[in-house]
Length: 287
Length: 299
Image (cartoon, helix red, strand yellow):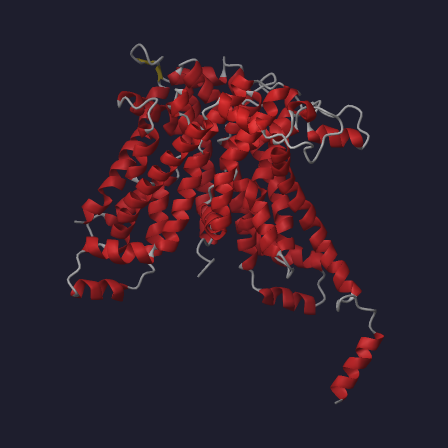
């Protein structure tokens, strides 16, 4: 009887999760263009990714740059605003609701919007920069040095509200008794932050860093839509590289090898997170 | 008596209050509100800029300094949007796919969640553990095999590729619903059993209605995910008339080019793609925020 209830989900798990993961590994050991039969080549794809391929190492370092660049500053900002929102102030729910709006907007709409915002000649950002006296503002998405930071800024903008909500939930778990005791002992705001908030929030912070890293390594849409990975591969990410190899050049084997590299990175981060997850309580709110 | 007296003295000696607040408190509040306000403006401004650009004549988009409020308001971008792209069809396709896949996920996942929460069967713990473990598998490794599965099913360029897998549930939704179902008191199940209700009836008539808050959360999450999904439609769909809003927009941008006339149209389309979610968000803000925060899903 119970099996009737779980059959769809178990089938789904086998067909759409377990099988693809195993199958993907097999494909990564072949050369396959989807037309002719796959030819087994062993670890060749992995070897060529790290030795002969020019773009992949770039994609790997770009993705790491993106993952770090978008997560650490974004989380620092989110922590700051979560602490401000955790004070007894009016309108905190309105602020929170506003900060969350970009989170629900589609990445496509956001990417198209920011492409326009970053437009070097007529974009609003460069208008502001020029009117405060900057002669040669960056060319943003068209510049090798600034394209990735531009995508990072946009990503932080879109995800900030999300991280704020995560941190707020964590902050609300910290008993106010600690702060009361500390202020009786004469600790100022900064000392309270350093000796109460940071240590008690550290599991949540670590969780957020690891999760942001996992998302960062799967970045695709912004590069695909805004720069196509350019200029000069400056914004090429691993998933975009995978996408191009698979669906433009039909190098299914090589693309699957890339997928497995991402797999290994994400699994390592996930295990790291899983070990720390005992600190992370998901069920506090609402009840 | 003396308390009142001393309070009066204290008030007289204290610095002058404004609207009943001490200056110290006002400065303290300002130091909190100013950054929060600046941040709120930065969050909202780009979206207002999207609205403003979508209502601007192409000639007015490239002038310096930029107009914040379009003068005159130019609706033709929206007209032109529907001329250049089957935007109505995109919205319809997106709605169809999002509604059906949300229904599918909620139905199949809640069945399994009920079984894992309330039915004893051999291997249920192990099975649930394996299901949770599959949540950790990153989407990246599934892209190519999924494409090949859909290709061999003949579902490339068909909405089935985006809908049918939902009817096989999602590990994550099962997990969330199971946790919620586990909180429903056993007494409810017991008394229903005594009244002769079978498991399916208990699921359908008791757990689904009682589980509405959790179901609403997962439904909204899945709807949002499906509505905003770019990757799935990008690899499965080819024909213009099959496309969803996100991929339709990226195609529109590609075909309209980045010239002066196109920006307003692309912004109009982007706004139309975001508005349905904004309306949903306005109606069920709580579910969005709780749901996303709980799930660890971003973007």
